Length: 116
Length: 116
Image (cartoon, rainbow over all chains, first blue to last red):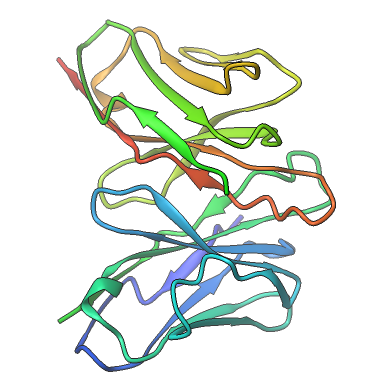
């Protein structure tokens, strides 16, 4: 079946602009995670959704970052007033809680964000 | 919070040799440890995982060992092939307990090069 998809695949923006990144999880997956991967680094947790609520936002680096999820499906990560240090690949992952191997997170291809 | 250290950062082996990547974690409550392989420009793909009630797990040429007492776990790849060349990430999470989200805390990654 279809995997996790993300759009856009690449985004170039100017410092100070807002950007929206989209994630479409695997159908039926109730858990959704956003991670950030800076060049040559590991993945950093940003936010977790269970259904449409976000019980863990502890990884969001500043109040310029926000995310929402609707219909227990699509999620949008918004970065306001982008800064050059926001340049990174933003990855989304989903998992199916309640199933066997429920811990397994399946990743999307990521959105590569470059802030000039 | 949880911290995961991964070594080495780069590893070069000859085709057919074995490769070992090691990770340590700080939170003794962690109970799920996946390994992801990420090829250049691609999404992370789960290659093997282990839970804290198991000491070792094998899948063909790949094995993972876990030492809960020492809080470290390792990935072993035998009979390496050029297509094993990629960046490998270890991760740790706390799964299945009230209030825990299953978010993954990643190591910094190991770039494995297998020379033909």
